[in-house]
Amino acid sequence: MNRLGVIDRYRAFLPVTDKTPVVSLQEGSTPLLPAPRLARELGLPETSVYLKFEGMNPTGSFKDRGMTVAVSKAVEENASAVVCASTGNTAASAAAYAARAGLRCVVLLPDGKVAAGKLAQSLIHGAEVLAVKGNFDAALDLARRASQELGLALVNSVNPYRIAGQKTAAFEVVEALGRPPEYQFMPVGNAGNITAYWAGYREVATREGLGLPRMMGFQAWGAAPIVLGKPVAKPETIATAIRIGNPASWKAAEAARDESRGAIARVKDAEILAAYRMLARLEGVFCEPSSAAGVAGLVALAKAKAIEIADPKELRIVCVLTGHGLKDPETPKSLPHKWRAVPADFSALKKALAKR
Ligand code: F0G
Image 1 (tube, rainbow, N blue to C red):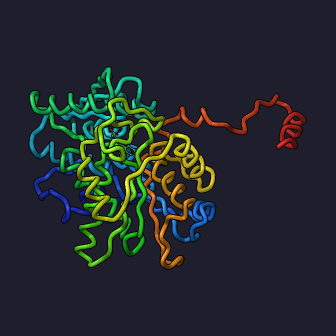
Image 2 (image 1 turned 60 degrees about the vertical axis):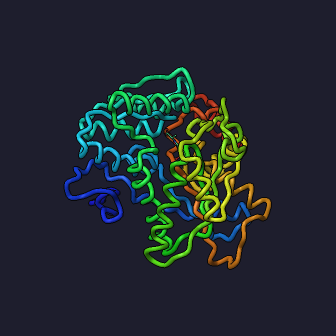
Image 3 (image 1 turned 180 degrees about the vertical axis):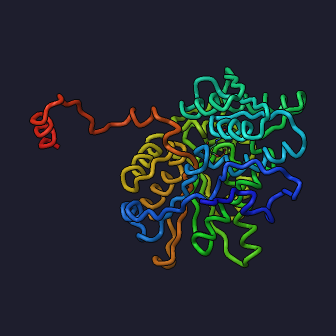
């Protein structure tokens, strides 16, 4: 299959020229999956809910869309090394793209708070992994200083090339639906992605004379600075990807919320886990816990009958599933399952299957 990466597919809308060396893993072009069983469960029109499964990117998260642009530009600008702070996915993506470009990569991770798959990715791609004795916010402060004082190229989403690449997901949604959705639900951590989608939707709307979705962002209950209107010194949640107390793109996220007549609200860890399981069991889609925060928000609003339905046949709701479930192999084990041991014996198997 000849798949174009984000830069080759959307070159005209990105800050690249013919001289930019393209560092790509053929990211983007992710599926927009209809979710009729989930929609029915929530009492919404069966044709209304779609899942933008960003876990299908090369390193398993949406970060690859921005990283292809950020690393390509770093090479163009003769950087010899990149640095980022990360709850895991940015680091995994930076490590992979830096490896492909032959650049040194330094990643600063909150010690003990990164899911196993993400840490494994940073290690195998040869990044220099530094476990910071502090949270993501402290690690980001260090990464900014390392960039300013040591000359490493910062590839967090404060780098505008990251946001430029990530906005292409909105282009793909509009292409797949033929128009923007009425609502988009998504998790919010450092708030770069909601900023990027809003930029992307605004761009296509201007270009093609289309409407705009309401941007519905969800933070975890114990890590909800935008909802509370002040930084959270000790953010806590099982959704470690969005365990962030002082988001870098705070103001831009508020602008996306307000300009789109959307909302940024918070969901409890139990609601996130319930949505995570629901996606896996009703739709066969395995995302990481943080990715399910947006769906948990949709569940809450659907239950409260707070989704406006002008025409049931025409309603389109997109939930962005930001990362793949295999990133975090531990969380499923903490939930109740049908799991039993059986002797290697057919009659024992028959007996076990008779008791459901
Ligand atoms: N979902 C996943 C799976 C993430 O990894 C992140 C952020 C988000 C949602 C939130 O996106 O920060 O743009 O609001 N992960 C960053 C990281 C912080 O370091 O990997 P955001």
